[in-house]
Image (cartoon, rainbow, N blue to C red):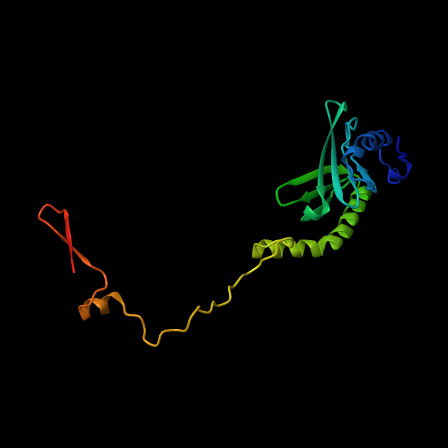
Length: 198
């Protein structure tokens, strides 16, 4: 079992953090570690608090379901997060995370924990600001950084022999001169082809 003591610095519920740490490891990449956990403190009934965990790569929303018997995880990569908002109330705070498709809200977080999450998000925002700018440019131009646009212009082909001195005659010029190189075919009354006329 992973030691959870260094995640309990801001009054987090130890049972919730321990349960989270036991289940969230399957979601993490190799070498990825949870850096901070914020746990809800609901004012009246706080038996099954939800929590938010952050790593250098992602933010993870963990919600307890079925009276604490199961957990639902929603993860968002920091590079996909477009905005993170912190709204403080009298005794608690709400964190709102917006991506291109989803808005996720976690309420009833202690203000000290919510501020720490917000500070962590600001660090990641500064880190990924260049990537967001590049992605916006790619969407505007229709090209991704992995695509390479190649244009091909064939070189002009030189003719095999010398060009003729006289320009070639068009069909209209040939007809007006009365000389045709093609033979004409006559037709009888029934529309059948007769012998060629030269």
